[in-house]
Image 1 (cartoon, rainbow, N blue to C red):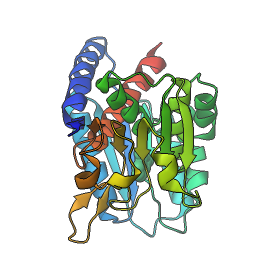
Image 2 (image 1 turned 30 degrees about the vertical axis):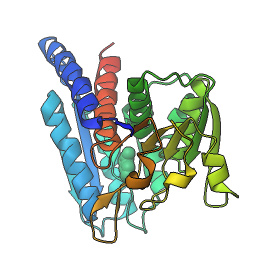
Image 3 (image 1 turned 180 degrees about the horizontal axis):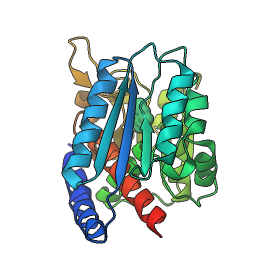
Length: 282
Ligand code: GUN
């Protein structure tokens, strides 16, 4: 049976460190600040935003929430981003995705000042990640790397398989594993013989967005399995992309949902916000 990678516990350690760091910064007159922008009433987004605010409070980061109605126009949202770009108390800006259909997400992301882009979604930051010379790492992939580190298993030379090719997780995840010298395969909805590919993985990252998609038959014995998914099962219960019941007996380490990658994502956001405040102060 696998060891469960406790994202809450690892996350608590990161936050303890950040708390000390923020305390020292405050003694020097610097308070890191994060602005979180949410448009509309999407219930999942509301939960994520609340957890981000709670995280800020926990480590002493100043945060402000801008909750805008679903009918907000693109111009109104861009005007707010512009205001936050100029606001001295704000070091990080996070616009919660997805945005309502009538708003062009790409235009909004590109409007965020790259120095305040704590999600690392701006093209300038994505480009920097490609060349391994970055200020911010995208939060979810960075959190996954921390959890892999926790296993003590070296990524170098390992077969790493990422299922999912999104800009938020799949693509940057593959890049970080590559920078750690993993042999990386990205799978997606058009991949042929998916199980054949995933069975080669020493490290398997599931970022598909489909409940319990990865099953025991897709796993190599002793693999490390990281579940980025956050779905509801047929009974409305939170579950990941991995079918925990059939996968856990086959692998060496596995992340639970909830309590795996989720808390790490928020801790990495807090870390990026602190880094942004520090770099501004230099
Ligand atoms: N929606 C789902 N995940 C994320 C994330 O990491 N950042 C933002 N801004 N929106 C999201």
